[in-house]
Image 1 (cartoon, rainbow, N blue to C red):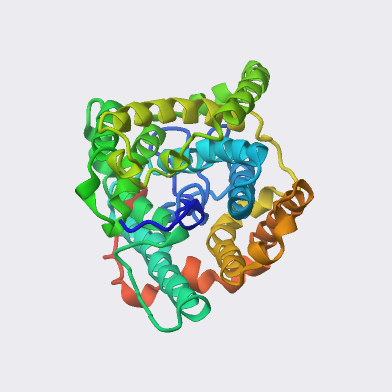
Image 2 (tube, rainbow, N blue to C red):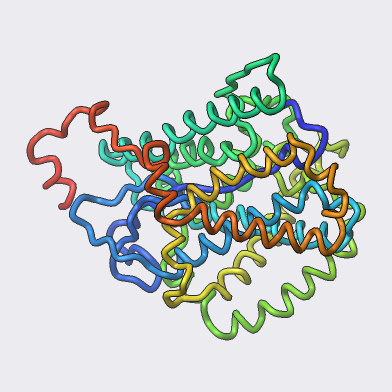
Length: 395
């Protein structure tokens, strides 16, 4: 996979719609009804059965909103963090858990996916179609803003944010298989470790990321509501304080010599100029650190309804649209022209701008305006289900 000259072009992200919960179990932690399907950083494509309750769990909507804010803030830090050890340390911490958190929740809400016709339809309209729309949109944007002499629609090579959509599409299709495997998480970790020292894999469909992030999705498939209950206990919240304090200290110490590419999971060890066995070692080490920080993050997510809870339903727009802003600023040379943005005050300003911007992009008016691209119905493209199919679906 041809890599950009620096992390700013490689940043992985974020984001999807929230599917239905597994059958015969409480669909969502702390709730007795399934969460509707229409969001991003948790698992695009909803597979909620017709007629199912659409009561939402505020905890997951809060988690998605807070995570998407961290995603946007970290993206705005990337172009200006080289001269700041403290900013890079914070960047490393955020990148250690924001994507794992999204993917774990996506896996959790994919537990009931069995490739039924209505689920496949939602997978196509909720993940595949947005992928092609936004991959094409980003390609056009790059052509107009950066390279007007070359137009390249690389649908097989996701650019910037869109990799998560194609990854989720693949992960979800394989869900029935993971539900059958006796030891799914060890198998997924083995696959990720093997991918970490396979430089010949190429860039098609960003398979490095698909395979190296796979264990987080599989872990989500294995989780039950009581696991989310556990991380929301007061004792866990208290333990999260020294955990993040230690993480900040360690990240500050290691920041000058740590390669952020290890957190992007888009290259092999050899491509990072390390011996092959460094790949499996770092895969397991990063996985362990990411799980601890993800648990710490989730422990402090509010469980009650907050002013931003409703914005959790629009994270797909915040995720996919904020990329145009950060890339546009880069193409326009904003960060080079205003070098003071690399100063502490400038970084604080960028953080506030990123948080406010992504918040506005998650609001209902924006979600409605872009529903044609992120949540298309497309009934014209699918055959109607035979009579009695919906009744069988509910049984």
